[in-house]
Image (tube, rainbow, N blue to C red):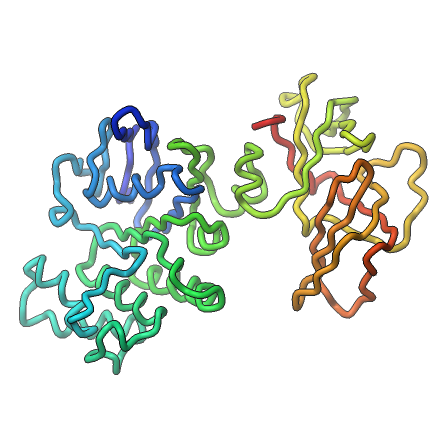
Length: 362
């Protein structure tokens, strides 16, 4: 069931086009991440859904009803603000009950509903505390309980974890997703953090300069970006730019800068005489201390020199300089193997199916 739908929505501030003809839909119980850099239009989009801004063109539909002209309190939408916006003079119970009272929820049922929400977010025993007596994570859960208490059709989360430290943010990503799933909340998460977007969202919409540049599942967005912008924004990347040399049986050989030859999967429909950008994720790059005999024209293989090594727990991060001064990053799982040394000559290799090909300059 389609709960939220944006149809060709556009928003202008004077001559500035903040949101440019965007459309997407969210199904019942789905969590959709709106992801993009600062100024891309994602927060403006959230504000139009909430009713704080009015779309210049297009429609915001909630359960098939056009929200045009409806004020925020006339929309059945729950909102968790970036700074949580808890009332400092109110207790936890009073903060969670606030929206219920504003919506004229039956007075005798408010205590039970508040208790249900506090149990959901694991804050039993904190009822009489005020916000300044809570940790950042506890404040976030109070704000979430308040947003969910009115049983909204759509829940909007504006950078919900950005105020927390890195360790707590990672822990709460999974807790937040579990809470939203337990109540089948239809949710929009606005964030510039790609890890947060990918871990919380069932689907992801990537925005840039007011436009949607790609939408799909987290796996599709990461493994099959359609442009260089998306590939670079979603995770780390190594890049090669090459011209088509030859093709056969769904594979193409590109000649990259530095003289490297790169074999990539490429359907015939995508072949042209132009340049291509090839992305290889660091976790797909293999660094081997034993330099093999590549021959005169090695494919997907190059010699290099290790310039930096970072041993980060279970991961090894290597930076290798190849011909032409280009730096290649590689991430390997550390399982007790001998760690190469800075300055060591190594071989860098990757498989054709690990290459992501996009139009040059996209």
